[in-house]
Length: 322
Image (tube, rainbow, N blue to C red):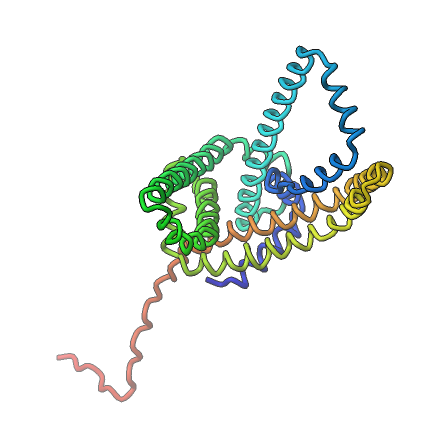
């Protein structure tokens, strides 16, 4: 497979059809997750006992019915956000796949409404495909954990020592699974398949072209997504610096001012973060779609060319008529 063509063509598509950036932003929904801050929060609470005590008194004065209502409202909001993230992320992925296919078919213009409608057409199939794969993976992980626990108890912990080298395979296995999932999604949308056929087709393309998939995966996942994600996320370190420095001092005023400054900086950087993430997601999804198309589209057979008639030699004697 011509990897250079795929990478170049993917960039040409998303640069020409910038509406795909919007679907890249949608497809990025739910992929980023925040962590950390628990240690600093613990330090803040441990060094500000008076503030913590006031907060506890405030919550103790609340009516239990109000607390219950707040919990219920919080759960409803959380569920609504999850549903919204799933909807936008799924439609965004479908829009990128369909947009890339249309661009390869010679479309001169792509509109948001057109790709959005087509995204809704494939929504439930793509959603349940990914849900089914996630359930299978989760069931496999749970079964492996339970089996490992039983064997660890039965062998007095010796099995866990033997298991350590196998844990090193988790990252490459998860990486290969992500490539297969990409191909299954693309297969379902490109060839208009149902859920099971999409999984079978994605697996077939993945296995039949395992070498090309690994190379493209190294380029897109490690060479572009990881490095690009680090570059995009690097400014967030500067955004968090005022809050971290304020918490490090342990002073209430410094903590408040640091957090406020970090929030302001984050709001300023957020539009750039969304655009950069959308472009990166659009590029990788377009490249995966082009990879599928290049590996599954058979070249058109050359037309049969008739052999020219043999030239008549001038030296041959003319035929005699009897």
